[in-house]
Amino acid sequence: MPQKNSSDWPRLVEYRPARVSDLDAIMAIEIQGFPTPTPREMYEKEMDFEFYLKRVAELKQDRSVAGYAFCVMTPPEASINTLAVRKDLRNRGLASYFLGKILDDLRELKVQEAWLQARVNNLAALALYSRLGFEKVGVRSRYYPDTGEDAVLLKKELS
Image 1 (cartoon, rainbow, N blue to C red):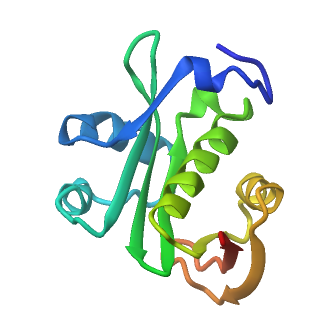
Image 2: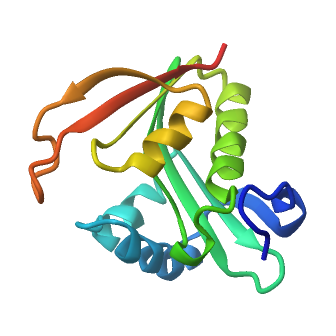
């Protein structure tokens, strides 16, 4: 696997629409990546929503899901509700590559603004989003009910 900030991801990963058959892998990443995982039933419902952009990064070597993202599209805006990569693949540039691909898709779909939020203490995610041009536009106080943490609201102009 690539080392930190590798440029090999386009060669190693297939970026594709998520499928129902990916849900076991998505849930495994969800459980290891979030203090309060989204229930599987929610993802099952979202798989049917046409106004959602659902993508996975799949390792070509073993066909395993390396990351996933779910975005609600309400053009001219989109909200990136979930973005996660496997714990063993973090800090190697995969999230940056993957989010870049998602933003490319959103541009092609005529989305002009991408929105997302992150826990105020998730410094790695906030640094990634800043590097990719997201700007802090607000804070949602005590947004996360599991911990009472604030959410940082970020926006990126895509046009």
